[in-house]
Image (spheres, rainbow, N blue to C red):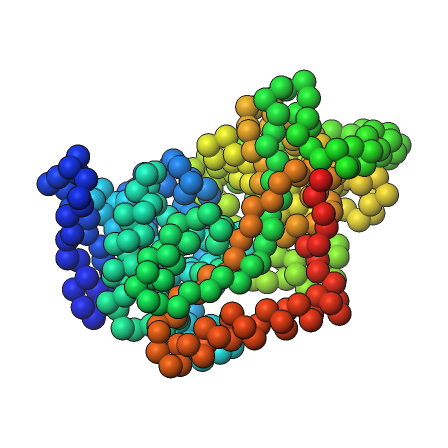
Length: 398
């Protein structure tokens, strides 16, 4: 792990008397996969509880991303410690552009379209002090023009970092992206769908007739696998590639880097006890499949696919009904659909979690121009695009 330019490991004493004698230190370092692996035990302990306790903020997720997608295989890790305890980490990568194509020395989140979401990782009750220390380090580092974080939750740690930057006169912007639906499962196991939107009650009721229609094709069953299963993974890739995602070029199986990422990330998720695979079968053969992640009584659904030969039976929604019932019995309290808001999710979801791409710009002349582009030029263009093609996330929740 190579330190950058200046010595950023200076300590600052916290004012809280209970923390007297314990100092917060920070460090910025060029890092490879081996550095993430070396830091993994402390990282896992840091994000095992609280808002950062999500699979996508675990070191194995970033390690898999770095191996699969990051050119050069190097990251920039910004860390904060209180004494010897790791209390925060921000994984970034160097880019030569921001907003896709605009030239700038950019520190971008170590994430992409397959990452689900990104955030500053912090220990419970340590987020603010960790973000403050990280910003002090980034402020003194002159190697960047723009910091860009993709798909960050609006109530997350990176938002705190952005506030610290704004207080120091740096320019910040937020570009709204995903409205990710989620469902708070009812604790009454007898009625796990109690919190689902009333608007779609009839749609959920019709699934009984779809189930009977599916039974006309053979014996219907469900499968749950905890841990990575190569056969399941390969079947999922084949089913997804045979459907609309394959025709549109978005299937995992059409992208070798994506295959490498998911295989590595899911294998490690399985070792950590976070991976849960579901399938709906007819005569033992899957007709709908889900790759799920479960952690701290919360379930996350990054990938679902179905066999389009059975589309008239709505196999994806039938699998969803079975999955939610099983999760309620397992005392899971929260189902996160991830990704963008869409009708097939809103049949079940009652709320959304908002996400944004977030930007921090240096307050230079060029920085102000880049900031103006994000704040003033891009929004009208986005509005025009939605006026012409429609907003894919315009479905109402009730």
